[in-house]
Image (cartoon, rainbow, N blue to C red; front, side):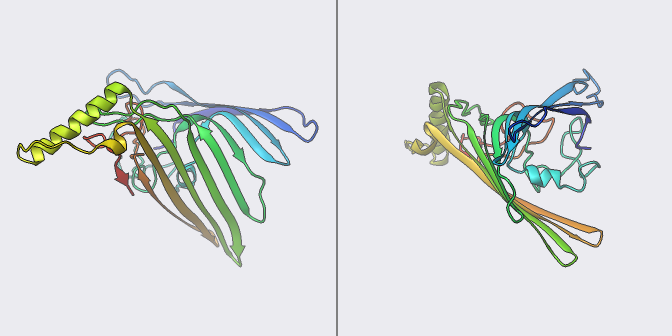
Length: 266
């Protein structure tokens, strides 16, 4: 399934001057081994955060679940069960990662959640930037700036029908190191030369040789009616890739093609 065992606790200080301060610690442990080294038998410290709440909403500082695509995964009806096999039998067996959503993952962040207003909510955060990987090594690992993620949602009822809709997104800019930029340009010129049957040409790689803008948007709804529930989600991204939990060698898996240019997924 998707969820490992979890042990977590939240400690809250007494309310003072209208402020509530709490700390969260969440440890997720895996019991399934890979049959050889048992590398999955380990503790995963996913949540270590401090939250300050008041009339302004709440501000979370620390490590927690990301914003982009989080609602899709938290509203997944197979969250506690097993879906289609996701390609790596030693990792998760929930198959909708990369199909209905990109795995949100857990990142260091500072996130502000606004107070609710007539069913409308919003949150925005700055998160640790994530390096991008290419199968040929034409990566982009210079995470000079943080990643920005945001979400807007709306909760309402019409008679017996309850509805919750949301849209969220992320954006980050990454630069290539000098070595990565040289490899990127070399790789693209090699591909261009092979495609042009030996004719000497130079690829125009100025758009991605130094910096890459990547991001994505996801959306979804959860409808409830007299005990029935329907969840639908979708996403589109550029350079974000689709992650398979337990099958990541760091960074966004599959986010760049063999030439080092960002892929589009939906």
